[in-house]
Length: 232
Image 1: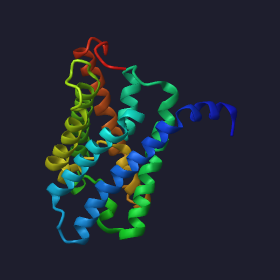
Image 2: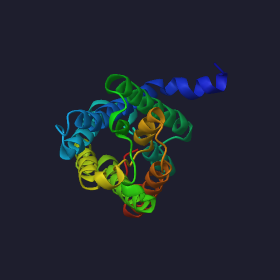
Image 3: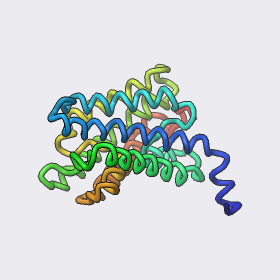
């Protein structure tokens, strides 16, 4: 291994492994619920799928958040970096770990269940890309805003971040999932897209989450004295 790459990866291998595992579990459970709902002709239900996404996010935050800070999302990692609370040298390793975890999850789901329900891929309703671009940006802003407020602001009540963030993911999936897929996460969208070969409007699920999270950085900076009130 090249010495420079070794220095970049080795000190943080546990964090990166936690990010890969966490993103794997998120995609495996969440998109798996979408696929099982299709296979069983609606046994899980849309509300059930939303609950799975929210619950798995909450569980992962509480179980491995102390190891990697529980990003599981390239848009979140980039937002933490631009807000100045995450080191630049870990941005690429974290994102690569997240993407690999998502791809592994979709690959195993494809092997286990077949390519049903488009592997849980996120697609705009009726192909309306502009609508999904706008809504995914807003959803991602809300999610990142809640992450800052509940998980990082030292003024927030301790111990409730996982619940707040998980509930946010679940409710956003519940009320907007049928329209946009409620991804808010490029890794969550990449896994099914890559394994299933479903690339229609995939760019939305990179641009919108990153843009929405960056808007949250700007807004929460105003509310936290330029992030001086955050736990780093």
